[in-house]
Length: 507
Image 1 (tube, rainbow, N blue to C red):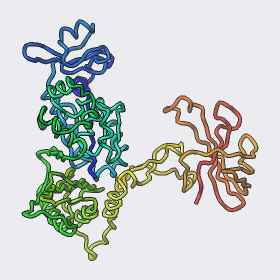
Image 2 (cartoon, rainbow, N blue to C red):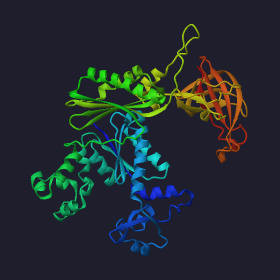
Image 3 (tube, rainbow, N blue to C red):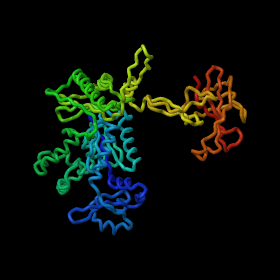
C-alpha cells in the first residue's frame, strides 16, 4: 500500500526572509508581509502569522494593509527564491528520509514514504521529526500522511489538526468534510461549483459524475479520482546534478522476485564502478521500480559506513524485495546512492602479514534495515557524575567518544530508566539500610558498602546547587546485589527529600 506524506509550509516566504536576515530580522511579534505586482497593483503575496492575526490576507492591496496595521514591515516578494528554498528542502529530505521527494509548489513538499518510514520509527515519528526539524530552522509546517497525494495534500492544508495520520483505505471518509478547494482545483472551477451550492467534497462525492464532467470538464473528475485512489498520480522525484545513479530499462516488463534480484545484482555492480571512479562509498541506497501503470515502488537501505561492495549492496536490497509490489510489471529500475561519502581504497590483509580485524558492519547494516536505525545503538559514557546522565546512545558503528566510565566506584550492569522509590529501615545520617521493600517484596540486607556521595550539577539547574545523593551497594540474604541511594545528606532537608530509591542492579 502506497503512503504519501504532504508537508504544508504556510509561511515559507516570510520564514525565508526572516532566516536570511538573521540578527537583522524584525522581531517575531512584528507583522511582516511580502508584496509584489499583479498588473498595475501592488498586492500582498505573503503574510506571516502575526500579519494574518492582524487581519491581513494574501491578495489585499498593499496600501490597504499599511493603513490597517501601523508599523507593518513590508518587503518585496521573490517567488523564484521561494521555489529554490523548497527545492533545497526537498533535496535535504531526499537524502535523509525517503527516496521519492518532490516540490509541491508553491508552498509544500510531497514524499512517497512507502518502505522508508520504518527507518524513522514509523509514520507518526517520521512526520513529527520532519516538522520538528523544520521548526528548528525557523520554518512553520503542517503535515499529513495518507494513501494518495491528493488526500495528503488536502489534509495538510485544510484539516483542523496540524498533524494528520490517515488510516489506510479511508481517503474518501477523511476528505469528505473538507472544502472543495482542497481538491487542488482552479479558482474559476471552485467559484463555479460554489455558485451551484457545492461547498464540501462530500457534496461532490454524492453526485453522478457524468453531469459534472459535462459542465466542468475532465479536471474535476480527475482530481477526485486522484484523491480517492482510483487514478494514479506519480511523484516525479527531485534529482540533484551530482547524484550517482544507474538504471536499467526492460523491453518486456518483469515481475518475478528472482528476476528483480538478478537485476539488482547487475545494477549494484554498475553503481560500485561509478562510485569507485569518484572515490566514494554509498551511505544510503535508493532502488526505484517504475511500473507500467505509472506507479513507482521504492526501497531505501542505509549503511553504517561508506559501502562499495556489490555483494553486500545486493544482499541489503534483496532483503527488501518482498516489499515491492510489481503489479502488472516493472518497466525500469533505478539504483542511486542518495548519500555518498569519501571511501579510499584499502590494502587487503593477508594471513602472512597480519591477522584481519573482524568486520561486523555487514551485520549492523542488515539488522538496522530490518528494525530501524534508531533501534540499533551502542552505550557510550558521558562525562557526568549523575548516573542517569552518564550514558548516551550512539550509532552502532560510531567512533569512540573518548570518554571513560568512572573507575573509582563500580557501577551496576543494569541501570533503571528511572529510580524507583523503596521503603527502608536505616539509621541516619550515613548508615546503609538494614532492610528494604521494593515492588511489594521485603528484603533483608546482609552486606553493604558506601556511601558514595554524588553532588548535583549546579551549572545546569539551580535546584541542584546543594542537592546530594548518597549511594550504597547492598546485598540481600539471597545474594542479589542492588544499588540504592538516599536523596539528601541525611541531615539537611534542603539537600533532598531524604527518601530512598533503588537505581540499579548488579549482575
